Length: 183
Image (cartoon, rainbow, N blue to C red; front, side, top):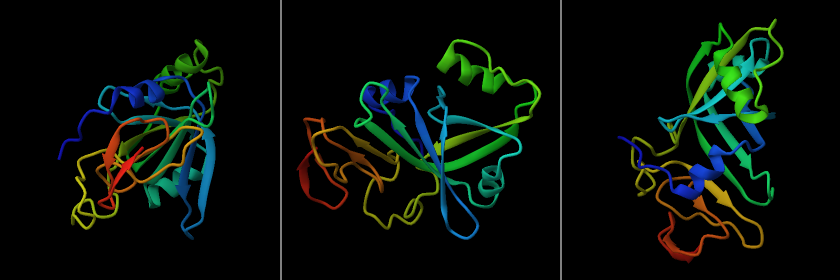
């Protein structure tokens, strides 16, 4: 089922060159996090690029579930977390993907040219609990996100598991637990 477009304020936050943290899952279930660069693609997936020698590639091949937390460079209290799956891992043979990401962050191509790289694309909301069974009663076509802004508590608002429109959003939302809240 196609996902609806992301709200403009989320596209702006995800589209900026913001710091981010990627979480993967080790085979023993231990979560592992690492700072990373990313790039949101026109199709709504998120590109991450890793050195070919990183263990997290092995973890992703065994369990492709990830979370990516993007922190606003203006205020780290404003952040969005997306959950999904790496739906594609491919060698970045000519370093074109890492160069696109590096250009987004630094305005220059990636400087380390002698190490192999692997590109992965996060499909937001893909493979989340209840996605195919409809266990949550939520509209599972919506992206799985958690948005927080400083000064107000986050809450589970939105239309799918893990969707949270956090502080700073003035509108009231129908929350995934069925209640109405001002987010």
